[in-house]
Every structure is written in structure tokens, then in C-alpha cells.
Length: 194
Image (cartoon, rainbow, N blue to C red; front, side):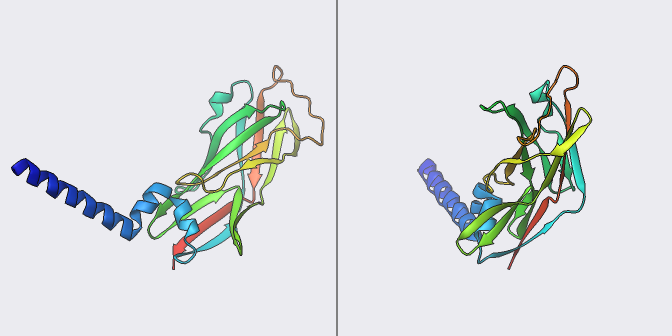
């Protein structure tokens, strides 16, 4: 009888805790993170603005795995780092960056290469970043290749082709395998509870 009583108390306690977490919003934030806050138009207001400065990271094209986790931007709360470097099916070199921010019931912040803007029909992703690369002493503009919504609990991802399609760049990794990527006009997103 004592064991049955204990199981009933345990089930009621767990159910009560889950209900309280759900009502307070903590459960949704824990499961969905920043995406939950961004989707709650009634509960949170957003301010987005460009981040001053130019930020760079050096990428080694001879060892893709060695680039994972290299930090491009870090303000103590928000970070952008190299998620991966790869060659896609078209033989284009690409870099994918991952943004990581903070979130709680009070709101959220994330700095990204994409502006997550609210529109009448929902949300949109706007690429404002100025991106350049320097390879073997030649600098040129690089172009956006991919982006995600706020698919991660703490941020998003965005990518660039490392070599432009509108300019011939001789890729000789034997000669020099380091390419420096510079990004400016990153975007800060700050959601605050209304």
C-alpha cells in the first residue's frame, strides 16, 4: 500500500510541475528557445539594429575540420562561430556560421548575419552583411549561400561562398591554404517582454 501511495504522489507531483512549467512559459522556452520568444508577437517586442565593426576569422582550406568552432564574434553573451567548411556538389567552397545567443522568460538576444524581421505575413530573413575574403593577397566580395530561421534553441545559421562566381580566383591550396573572411553590418536582435 505504501508503494502505491508513493507512486500516486509522484505522478501528481510530476504532473503539477509540468503544468506549472507549461503555464509559466518555461517549458516552451526550454523546448524551443529563442524561436518561441520570436514567435510570441503579443508577448515580446523586438529591436533590431546593426552592430558596429568588422569581424574576421581565418579559415584553413587544407583541413576543414580544424575550422569548426573558430570564433568570428563574441560580446560575452552572443557569439558567432564557424559551424563548418565544406565543398558543395558544384565544387564551390562554402563556410557556414552559427550564431548563439541568450534567452529567458524576460527576453532574448542574438547577433546574426541575418535580420529576422517581422512582417504582416509572418517573418522574413534579410541579409545585410557586407562580406569579403582575402586569399593569397587578393581581396574580393563574397556572396551569401544559405541561411536558416531561428531553428536552434539559441540562434540560427548562415553561410557564404568563399570564392565569387563573378571573378576568377586561382585556388592553389598547395601554395597557401588560408583564407580570411571579414563580415561587417552584423545584426543584433533584442526581444524584451512587453
